[in-house]
Length: 298
Figure (cartoon, rainbow, N blue to C red):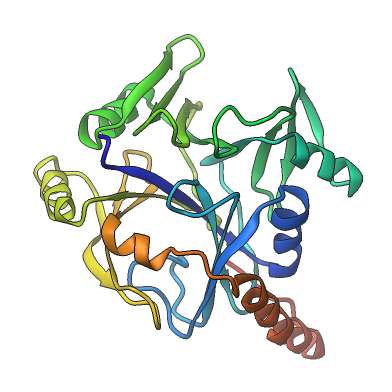
C-alpha cells in the first residue's frame, strides 16, 4: 500500500546518557525531538508504566522520509529484561563502523562486511561497512516469529505489506510498504517468541480515514487489538489518532494517522538541548545511590 509508511521502532532504555552517546556518537544519528510526560501514555507507548517518562526520537534525517528509533525512558527504572523477540536493526553506514572502531565500541565481525554491535541495554544492531543504497541508512528491522506462514498471512494479507523476499529453507521473509522504505524481516525461530519486559513496538502511518477501517478489519478477523482507536495528546503539538495491534506472536504494532503525525514529528532544533537538559536534571541515580538501593528492573 503506497499510502502507508514505516515510521519507527520503540526501545525502552534504562540509561539515557549512555544510550544517547551510542546513537549520536557511534551510529551518527541526530536527536530529532525530545518530549517529557508526567503520566503514562494511554496507548502504553512507554510500556505498562503510569509514572513520569520521556520520548526521544533519533535518526539520520526527518521522520517524513527516514525510519527512526523512539527511545522511551521511564524515570526510576534502570533496566529491562530482553526476550528473543527483537533480532536486530540493520544499518548501512561506513561512518558508523568507523565511529565504533575509534571509540572502541565492541564490534563482532559477522562476515561480508557486516558487524554486530549492541546498544546499551543489549539491543542488537548490524552495521554494514558500506555506503547506504538509499537515502536512509536504516535498511530493515528483524523480528522473530514462531510460524513464518502464519505471520506472512498477517503482515501481507491483513496489513497489506508487499513480500520482497521469501526463503523457505532459511525460514525468513522480507516485507515492506515501498521500495525506498525500511523493510521488516521476519525470521522463524524454534519454540515460542518471548517478549520479556524489554519488548518494543514497530510503528507505521496511514491516512487517518483508514484507521477505523483497519480496526474493523481486525475485529472481523478476530485479531488482537491492544489499544482501540484513541487520540493521543502531546503538549504544544498535534494530537494524533492511533490504534495498537498485536501480530500472531504478540509483536506490538502501532498505526497512526499520517496527516497529524507529520505535524507532530517535525524536527525540533532544540531537541539536543532538551534531551541534555533532561539528563542533567534527572537526579534519580543520585537518589537511589543515597538510599543504597538499585533502580528498579522493568
